[in-house]
Image (cartoon, rainbow, N blue to C red; front, side, top):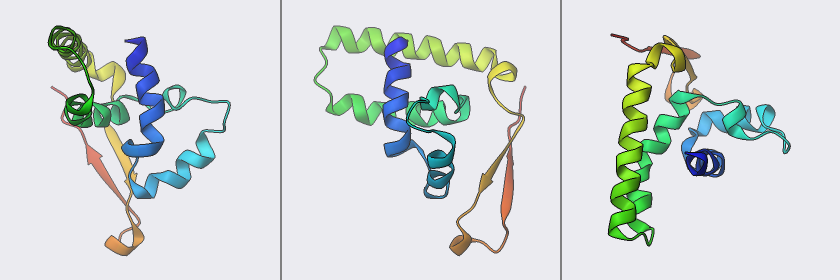
Length: 112
């Protein structure tokens, strides 16, 4: 899973942030701090959403890909089982000003 953390650190500023989160990233992550030290499970899930497409374009042998998929599935099950420890019960997202008259909205996770 160390490779996943490295991949997350590289992918977050390039493809995992919403447009309205980019300035916050610039302020929160100086060059000497990796994104995984600041951003949590909510952002990590964004990587898992994009991972199938990224793996499709990677040149990975079938057996290796199957093993990787099994490890990722195990990790996602772990996150689900321990969601109270890793996920916020509510997550505030700054909306694009041009797309909304509200300044903020709150997405509440249903934790069961």
